[in-house]
Length: 290
Image 1 (cartoon, rainbow, N blue to C red):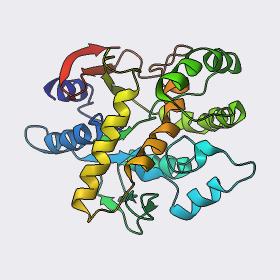
Image 2: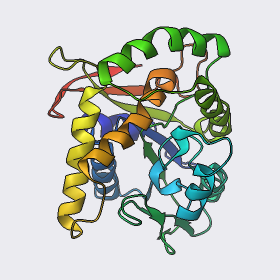
Image 3: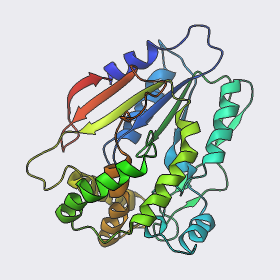
Image 4: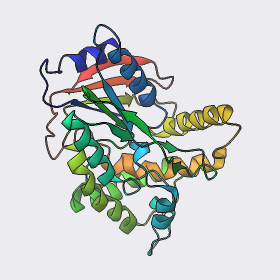
């Protein structure tokens, strides 16, 4: 935590004209939401006393009726059968929120998405959280924050290589390459949002030989996450089987788009990234800059 705080505080302009935009990425259940909440709390207190706006990419999900409409589009895309993959977010809303926050002159309502509604399908709440100006730090956290579209050649190479390997390791359902290509095309809509990042923090699980895949731990963590939520809301949420199918839809995102930073371009925050290495119990093993 102290290394992350120092990383952020060291980049704040004492006479800012705009907030510092911090991206936090990590797989489901890795602790990114907890880290983000702790950062907001610590940075808001003495000696920093900063006004921090915290937004999850999950809170930018389309409302439930929008998700249903997307899932029912023809031809159907199983990757859009529910929330999760790029394409299920309201990117225009995210850009509008960012624009308002960067003015540092008006109140901004941040949306809230309740994942327990509609039997775990989730829905955006009618009222969000209002943030007063001026905002000093904006934190955007999420599993696919910083994921960029890749070339058709790279997609083909991964499809015939690492994707086949991971499909066997994780017993993944069949995937149509055209469905993946549609998600890849949709990711281009996110680039404008990613291009505003000033600094990047990644929570990175270290590969463990006791698991068949480097992505196996995501299933364990996401199931723990769902159980914890259901324990506090009267049991509303997904079944264990539904969680497996839910995570299955995310794995293509990690395999095809999860290189951070992307190997084919240098984002504006390049050289100002911090990577937190963790084990399968979420204990920190080390810190790297990138």
